[in-house]
Length: 142
Image (cartoon, rainbow, N blue to C red; front, side, top):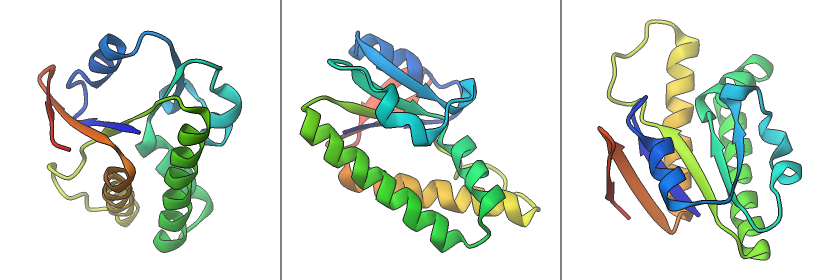
């Protein structure tokens, strides 16, 4: 599993597109549901998942307990890793770095950022390779 992390419009997608030619993209920005990842992953392609903060916001609409959501997302990351190993294909997670901004006043927005941070930590643990992207340049940090 590969994790590409960085700020908004830092060049994360460009890095992925230059490294992986045949991809199945699942994007919250295009209205895709995270629950559809298995059916959307075409054979002999790299699965790319982006828009995690949007999927977290969807979770927060249905569940108020952060720990319940964290456990669901943690299980999802582990399911992705297991399926990647079964298929012998690569999964790329594109995630936003949200921890360097101003702390929001609204509790729901703080919860989303907390969950995004926990998700990043869980993704780092199972990823073989982690790259941080800044201004279109990437640095391997794991």
